[in-house]
Length: 326
Image 1 (cartoon, one colour):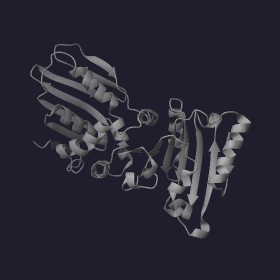
Image 2: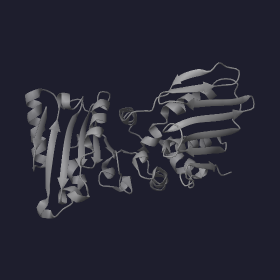
Image 3: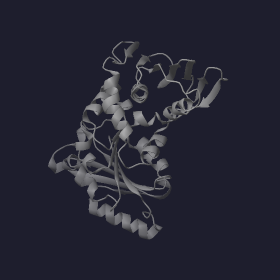
Image 4: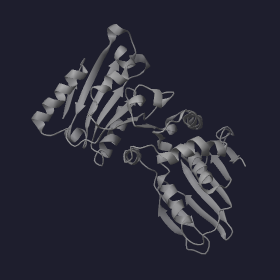
């Protein structure tokens, strides 16, 4: 069910939700959090689809705040157009899309405050361009978790460095979330005999992949070994492979297509492992499983990135190599 409310107010939206609940049953009961999605006009649907899919694991209220530079007109033009989606059009959530112009677009905190679920955590997500300092933005100030995506930036590596400079507990980025399967597989490999020290690490990926940089930073931080990071315009998008050098030989985990990786270990048969690129829905669902700060991400972005010394990444044309600082 979809209901449009042109030129409306927060009060009218709340009354309409109550009316829909009375007419259609307990639409809004059992919600565990409020997800606020801040995006631009024309870019809402992909984020809403991911939120609808994730809501089957995390029933929630989704508030989509859609505004752009051309929407910030004069006070006389101030208005809010809303759309409420429930039932089959909203997964296991209820979706409220708010298109704000004029002064209404300037005060996003006031716009959403009256629609937040009472006594429920608030998670903010910027699928595209994020505020300069997310924790100090109007929506970021009222949120326990703040999700960005450096991969959508025109310069992902500059975006990573900016996240490191402005990081506050509760911040996270999908470039980190996309590493979960890689981190789990590498940890499982190192948890098997022989329990030898890793003496060298090589990580390589596509030239526009911030996840590759974070993987290198995580490995160096955890294993306390210098990492050689290679970024290339050739090969598959994203992380392409990792080599861990030990006394008895080299462990190689290489992803040759978008879903299957090859694991080669000394004195063992070659294994083909499912290692797909994670969807937007998978990343969002994982981040919604925890509402406390991700301390490991904080260490990697604030400490590991600096130790890796990634300022030269992406500046070497087709291929750039960065050796970790000793």
